[in-house]
Image (tube, rainbow over the protein chains, first blue to last red):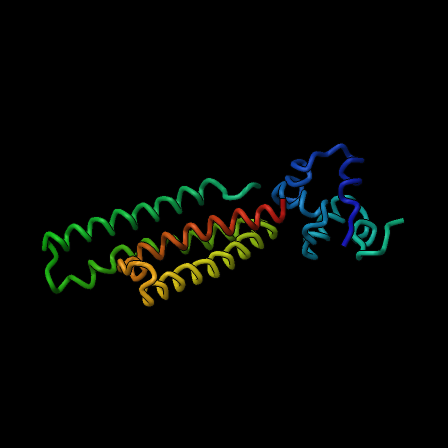
Length: 68
Length: 132
């Protein structure tokens, strides 16, 4: 799965630690999601979508499917 | 939210310390013959009580972690289980075949806990590197 988490975070000028605090996860978890080493659970993906006020499919997409 | 949260670390350390202190105290008491025979089974199992507290605390610590940290702990546990099995069984078999000296260490619970601890630490190193 690929995601736009790094881009969305950069648009808001948040550090990984800022985002981690907002999502109540560790900074390592944010980093692992951004680098594609870890795919978040559905509840966490919903929390991310809610935080960035975007639908999940606008943030996450299956491998091989690029974001618009 | 970095793991482990301090309150859990403190609690776990206290339980482990209590377990070690009781194990040493009971060992001394047994050696000196201070334990009446009717209380031997109570004294023998006394150090196990804080161990139960330790594992209850460990459950609380795991529940306080986020999903990736829990996955890391689960994978580290798998490494711990596998490595301990290989080391303990391997050494036991080597001793049985008299390739290494049979010092009796392989049958000791202290040896088992030591191998468990080190293989858990190795598991942490390997799995944390994977998700770095």
